[in-house]
Image 1 (cartoon, rainbow, N blue to C red):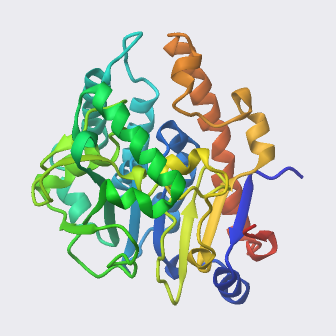
Image 2: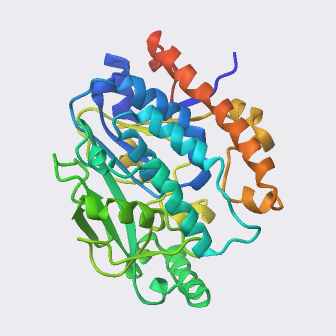
Amino acid sequence: MKSSLVLRAGPGARELIETDGLRSQDVKVMPGAAGGPKWLALAGLDRFLFGHWFAGRTDPLHTIGSSIATWRFTAAAQHDPVAAINRFEEAYLCQPYSPKPDAAEISRACVSLLDTLLPAGHEQQVLEHAFLRPHIITALCTGAAASESPRQLKAALARIALSNVRARHGLAQHVQRVIFHTQRDHAPFLPFRDSFTTHEVGLQQANLRPALMASASIPLVMEGVRDIPGAPAGMHRDGGLIDYHMDLNFRVDQGLVLFPHFSTRIVPGWLDKFLPWRKPQTHHLDRVLLIAPSDELLARLPDGKIPDRRDFARCNGDLDALYRHWRRATLECRRMADELEDLLARDQIASRLEAFP
């Protein structure tokens, strides 16, 4: 029988699941990866998890992510998460762009997309959710990296990339991490303990939308967001520059870190995509249960892959055809949620666990 899911668990997560099964109350943290259109592969899982599996929960669940993951979790933190996910998915599959949009046009389109995802008046639903505690990461850029001049920004990114090739902590010379968080309950992963200067900022109505926009503002693709209320002054860009797939020390001593992901590869930073030797730290994975699409599922998708941002260039301006492909891929990926629900009902999760490489 072909499977749609890959389930990988660290030693601590495996021990807990083999003893008690996979229980929703054991999940303490849920990270989310940056990745633009790749989130569409996870929409079905999000509907099941937030619309059904976590229903009725009261214990805090700390979500943490950058870029599109923060938008996913914003949908989940509304009173009707399934309706919010549906709105977001449909709007995402109908984004209007000119043949060669610049950063300003893409940013305007994303503001409209965010307005659909988070209608006026829904901010307090996110800030005061019964159990979800969102954490939104942005990258505070200095020097030429704060410029909106494509020429200056490209040069700055080249210098940053070179520093990153030498060592991941080289990024810390150029960008600082800002984490916006709800001011209720304490996340086990805070304060961060690594080489990056990290600013913790309380989430409030005045900075929720700017933080979400900034966290998704890919350099050269979108405009950055300057001077977010309550945060350090300066230019905030995509949090994936530092934390792309959340290679973090979650510091969960009891319970689980549940990581629905669109890939079995965990890439620490955005610039590490091109560095196959840059891998997550092993001890960060101890309590992690990763759920990702299987090779069998990917083979059923258009072009044999999940949607990604490069598809815009490949489609030669035919957005209708692109969105048809994306919609088909999104529907196929709902098999992941169906299979997860079945495995949970039959208490078969433990039998499917694989170790991280």
